[in-house]
Image: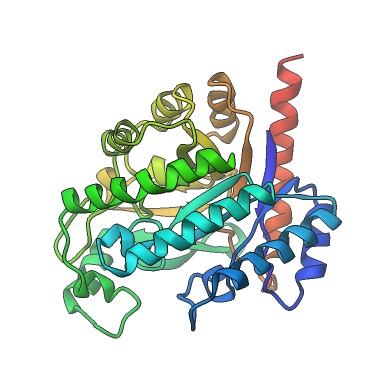
Length: 342
């Protein structure tokens, strides 16, 4: 297995950042195609296909010059998933990008957003909570989410929940139609398309757009669009938060060959049991990360492991300390796993 990390390729310190990732033991990076999307916001303007491809090539060149692979990026097809007319143009652009990704040997494409809910930033209910020594990390509460949704604030970053109206079946059908157009392009280009299920994995409720949450719904997508080039960006934290046994989910999708990449995040609590959860450092939560890696290995998984949702250390405004900590912890887990098999 390899370690992947986020490369903020539009940062003013991008050259320094990519060198830092190499120094701490990262093997491969993911990157963004436009600057605002990199930071969880919608772009301030539209980007042409040529601009997006140029941005991709620039990021890939920077990574490879630093001795790193650049194997993952993403594109946005929100309107296609919502069934809006603008979705046709999104699909056309995505197909052209997929070909460009294949030409550049960028092998994995994250089909964003995280569902039409656009989580986690597009769903209310998140807040920071202090943990060991005062480090901060995100927590989520269904109660807080419902209170905020009830306000129906059209100026909020989750206003899309109030301005769109779609059923779960319509959403599913739109997703299938989009993927049926994208998957052949991915197969021809030799790249893999990855779906990341909704984060937070909240069941459908009033004032909230529908989401892809449970393993049955995920499997329905794979049955509707059967392809070795369509799989999951398997987020361990999100999958655990559903309350469904995370090891069973690893075995289910891993044995199907559907886990293409993994996000590692530890948490305390699940939504069914507590109505909330808190994200914590890899060594502190409910899950044993070494057992997670062993479960992945047992399915034959040998892809990337990415630290997810970095915590906030005191004085670590650029998150370098937490990135280094997470990377070192994951590297130690990989080495322990490899030693166990000798």
